[in-house]
Length: 91
Image (cartoon, rainbow, N blue to C red; front, side):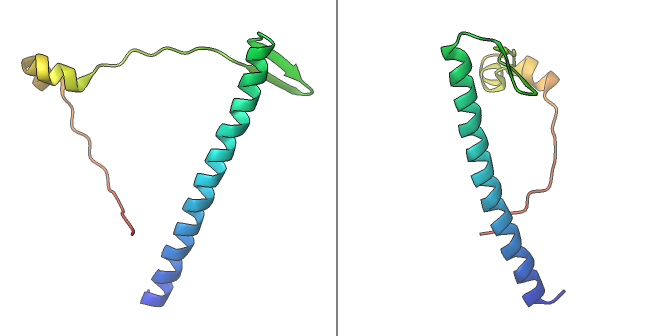
């Protein structure tokens, strides 16, 4: 692949990443409008046309690995599990 071809690929990637950011921001905005309306009506389920909306509070418990490592490094070292992945950075 030539440098010109690769340049075009990188440019297209950057454009799609920008579109993704804009789409994610709009998704969040629209979700917040729906949540706000459901909260103002004090509803946890709502039917709008063919759509059923549900709003639930979800709680998850996670280990604070930084605090565990600081306070109980012996336990942390037994259970720590490394993970690897590839990171592509383009500036």
